[in-house]
Length: 391
Image 1 (cartoon, rainbow, N blue to C red):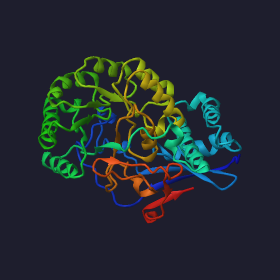
Image 2 (image 1 turned 90 degrees about the vertical axis):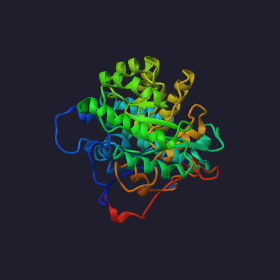
Image 3 (image 1 turned 30 degrees about the vertical axis):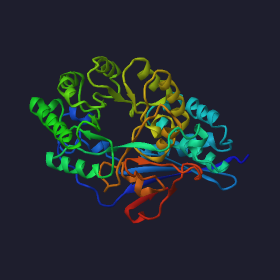
């Protein structure tokens, strides 16, 4: 079998037009700080990393990462690539453990696990291409005729603007919608009422026969969330996402145990063991790991099995085709997040500008091709004028 001969990383810096930031756009972990300016700045992803793993026969698998791409690139180039070059890509379980254990002193979370994820995703794409099968077929095959998706945008803004966005999205057949809160503890009771006003306004548009998910993006704290949950209950949210910072697992568990609104999270958790702890401590009712952070597809499949045994549904964070393959191959992954194609704002949109082949939702569903090998994406050359690329 052909061996891995090289790993190429590139950082794509977006230089094109962006939607300017606005106040109370989305709560986040930085809201607890006394600071001026855009508190959301460090959570915008206007850089992306591509990771191409090539074998001796010239086949290339494509992986990616969005967290701290310049640092992840350095980690891959200096540390992880030498561990992987020369290996058989079909020994993916060994390769994963080799990367994980050889860098365990510093790489088991954060930058290290993000680097492992990028390489692992590329290896799965590579394996699919080498055998001529889509990745989901290698993971267990089709468990759904097609994948239902939820519309993920609706950042906090003027009530009328949010309602108009929801009305427009409904034309595309979505049966579930996720919105972001714009106000948190620093905004007091007045901010609470602003949050509730927007939830009520969205329910006026989408009704109660469609799911509504609500995201805090780590911008609340335990006290504030405990006060908000009873006020939100009448709006019947499907879940409340990341109400506290990722390290406050006890806070997640306490909120989830209140059994008022299901608590979701996990996109800022790393590794199989990190997600196992969330499940065992009953910290979440919905697990939302991010495949290009948690350890790639190899780790994600193990996490899926643990979650299924605990009857915790898994709905991976973000759209992106690697997540769709996992969702298609797992019964316990009922729905996918879907970011609509849009001008670059937070940065999730960059995926559409860097890659071609990411499936688009039609009437609230998306489809994967049984005959397209690997992940089914290529690196695009259509928007190169809007990027500065660092090799």
